[in-house]
Length: 193
Image 1 (cartoon, rainbow, N blue to C red):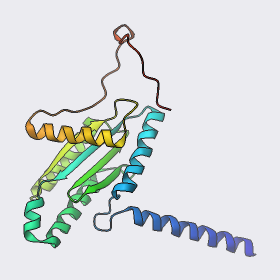
Image 2 (image 1 turned 45 degrees about the vertical axis):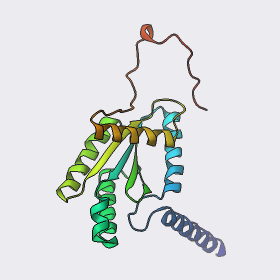
Image 3 (image 1 turned 90 degrees about the vertical axis):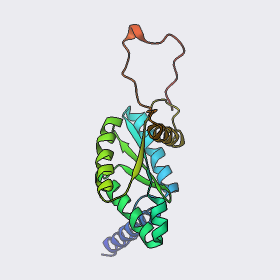
Image 4 (image 1 turned 135 degrees about the vertical axis):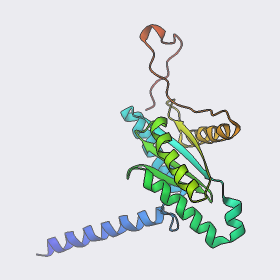
């Protein structure tokens, strides 16, 4: 009779430990992953995308309303960030990542999603927030090379965001596969282990 009780206690303790870890990884204000936990999760998703040859799109979202919120005080700033995070979380799937990387910037990773999919989702977020008086800037990047890292993808998405603001987006996305006769004749990269 004691064995089931021990198993139940062990499983209950394990569940509590997992729940506590998840709470520690998520920001209390916004509910999104904190930077360190988010980057680790993004690396796992990047590895999975390489293993399964699936798409992974990284989206950088920067809140442009920082000055107005700071003028109105910290409470307004917290409310603003909570609203932006809630809007982002409402448009991603449960297994997609939303990471807070600074006080006014978020990174989202759409597993199996393309830039076109991301554009559709995040334009809806941008429009909904604009109706609430919040302006956001968005940049996109999709995995291209076998040596992409979370940092390179985020940097590329930032470059796209800056290019979009300047009127010349520099989106980084997969090119369609070439026919064998059109394939480049140079060295081929070995797949990432």
